[in-house]
Length: 621
Ligand code: F6R
Image (tube, rainbow, N blue to C red; front, top):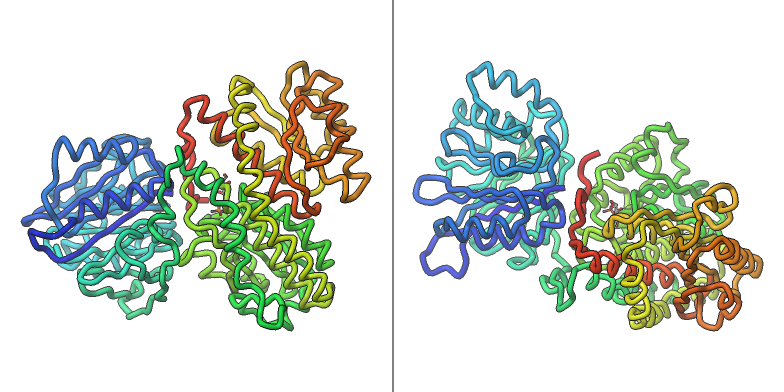
């Protein structure tokens, strides 16, 4: 939540770009992290100048167009998802204190802000906003007055702060540097030639450099045009971990689509293909280089717990069916925010798989820490390099979906399923549950999926016209069994979050235990039908479920594979997907549900990429 950008370069009048350009571009790219207000501060000629505005980055741009900023090579910016204090101009960042000399932007929550605030008030400080950030800025200004040095002041300030935070500060008396600190909130450094960058993630500076440095928790960095100096809060020198950014700037553009969500739905064949790439060694065995956990340990595990939130948790539910089937290891899926509060039974024989697109979800990060404290090994399945969760896990397996900008997750979901399947097959091979040729046959099924996903996308017109015809629905139900159940949950979540439409996903078998009472004349019900070539009884039972709701007046929208004629008599609408083995079906059946939600939201005139109240990366608990 909240996007942060910083830029420091060397001044010359004929430069191609200035701090304002870099910071605004970074804010546009990071806007998915929060979009209720935005602001930036730059240094010029002995003083700071700043603009901030409630609303999206576009409002800030309009404000800057009306009141232009000077050409500068030092700037920080922020796009906000409000925690303390509602979205307003005054609560927007940067918070500028010390008579206009010190500007601070912040992501996270300073938990002891009330106590700090009253001690600053005792010193005569008058607060103008409702934010914890202004308190942090006031404390920093006070310490700057005592020390005369921004880095030193930041070190001391961080020792006073409780909670999670990333802070960036600039001071008019030290105009060659940005000082930044982090604890449990994201921050990455971008390395340039004669210029350096800071961002909540690499998309904050992806247009300018491909070289980046990860920074650990409880570290401070002082960034000038030529130097990056990292220390801990006591001033001891620290090393960051360098990495090359794999994403390119074009991957973070809409590429001609109306929304990022639509573009990302279209990215899905590539996301699955790229996530599968490079996983097989020259002998034809599955080999996952990133998994630096001893094989003997992986052989000895007796339980897997997948921890994740939201869409990622639904990917985990899909994975559970496959992993238990292939590896015969009991597998649980747990919402990360529930995990550590129920005192889970976790020990050295437990493998925890943390699924997270952003790699920054605080609930998941905290669950990872809890699991490791209990002795479990943790594998992170993640899409974002340099993020906290893969950094703190014992091993990381990256999905290669490219940057996911739309708040509603799409391609990350398919990539997460793909990566968990690769992990499941790897474990099955390692532990001798499957023969090499069996693993290879399933890998072949997986390799065939990108083309099939493309076929579903190519058929989007049917779903689009259905969505238009249903835009006035007030409630939509989704039913599925086996792997179709988490797909139903995901279909309902997509509709809730971007079309603001009441939607529920149910296990189809649960229907008669209560939810069927919801069905009345005209109720739209999506049903995900398993392959008739899979488990016979499963298919037959779902067909009965369609009959049951249809008999009570539901409008049935049936997702069924090509050639499945049994559904025709009971379907008001049929969406066809290519034939695929049962466990592969989620990679196909989810796609029309994503398109449906996207098109209903579009038809209702909503902002598909930035739905109300949400943010992409949930870095508070
Ligand atoms: C829904 C959605 C969220 C995320 C959840 C976890 O479309 O995007 O439910 O899946 O917040 O996020 P990550 O995967 O970044 O941990």
